[in-house]
Image 1 (cartoon, rainbow, N blue to C red):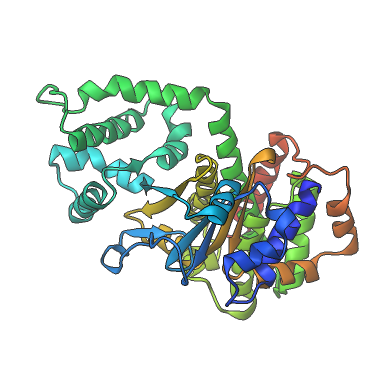
Image 2 (image 1 turned 90 degrees about the vertical axis):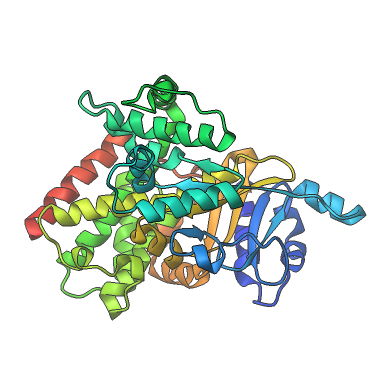
Length: 405
């Protein structure tokens, strides 16, 4: 079975299943297609209770739609035929940029308006996550600024994170009285250098920039057209993605679809329900779309984490943040399933309302667009064009939006 067909069959089995279908029934409906995949599946019926408890939901959020999570892999399926399967769920709290940025002031005892929130988060990380936390996401967001000659903050932020890790383990190194992070600055610098030299990290930033340019195009359409029709707007976005970018990024189009619905019928998903996103305001709206693109990129980032584990080991992320906007993003786009196809290094996320989106997208696309996508010579991940094309499109769209204000 070719992988394009395999992916479509797996998605089709999940999306066409009834609400009462068990995961085993879904797998049995397309056994061959599910062979070799790794999956996390949200459910209320069974599985590991890994969602965030109510007292912590003001600062923490899981990405899955239901109260429990089931894992699936070939190894798990084989073991379940013989006996119970032992599954290891790795949990770490994913820090966001705001939280990482506040750590230096927090540990130095300086004035900090978010002190009580930071304290609560760090206490939960220590007591309920056994000290497990991850600050790779804010490092990606700050990677461009790290390369600036006049910006000492990225290194200091990560040094503070290393200090926290050492503090959890009870082996902090004494620094001078002026800077408790001094013993960790070299380690921080080395990590930043690794990120700067990593092709994978810059590729991840390219993926974030793809979110940004699709959001720019979406808002330009919504702000410039007198009447917003959902199918017509989606068709224009598909043309833009195929013609200018060479790919059809479904996750980005899913977010765009939610934006378009708001402008079309007046029902705005909470994450998109704010003034700067409803009417263009010179520079500020573009800056807000840029920040929003990072928030939305969190789903692409969590996909990367699914590829970390092997066999019966799965990483289940929890996002922790001081930013209510990021929590709104996660709450507005709950995940039904996350599926990894290891052989082709491809991860597919299926959202809770994915079926509705897929129906809208299918109805919107022209025959010509569908023919392009079904071309057997087309790469499974599309035929992405040079980054230069993305940069040109971004430059043009920012200019057009500024002309609207």
